[in-house]
Image (cartoon, rainbow, N blue to C red; front, side):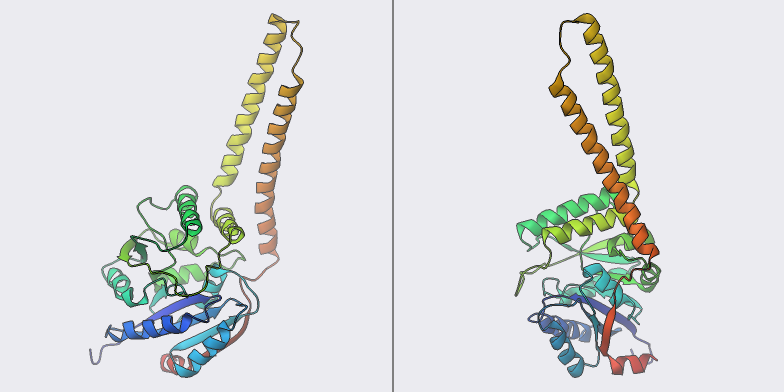
Length: 321
């Protein structure tokens, strides 16, 4: 390989409550890339304002390993915003994203890189047996349904947090500057040349997942309100359906009064209809308000993320400059 310029692979890892695991993930990446002679690599660790000593561990890793770059965010912005913060520091020809907990097998990155070399634009790791808890698996199924219905994801495409992408896909994602990034939506709108490779999913070595029900719900809302207008179409169809039901029920009430004038008009049925229609109206207004609120926030130039400091990565950056 002498005389041939190596392709630079940039690993971006959002970190939250990963003080006990991120060191082993970095070691595994280094060991895996040593066996891939055609590639060089850098590792970008983004601390999403973790409440433990994660950034202290990142600082030590940067001092010990010149390939590691640490990004410290000023507050917790969420996984996808942390990924975007890391994307802005990427220098490589290829982007690889994975988790900080060791469940995504960094030693199998060669499979993702091979799929890119074979012509894919983006490669997602697919797990035959996921080692998440039941709540996370349920959340993943709901998220998959949402991606298929709202964003047009192919049903046979498996989406995960472990993926590799070509540089032009990264550049397209960086064009998105609004306050509500959703990386999966950005990938799906950039290219359809996406494939899967099967890798092993591991048990979590330490700690618990940072995703609560509230965070998953916020992520789903972010996905379909930022990258799809289908919820508004559904609201329109639901409104038309309610109006149609109300019209038919009105005709039924008039006919019933003519046929059986002695039957009193039902108060319970009237209240049920009012509650149903009122609930639908509030739901639709809330959905419209969600869209308008996000537009307002974006118009006020709310940041995707705020970086407090960037450390490390000096040797790698000097070679590239």
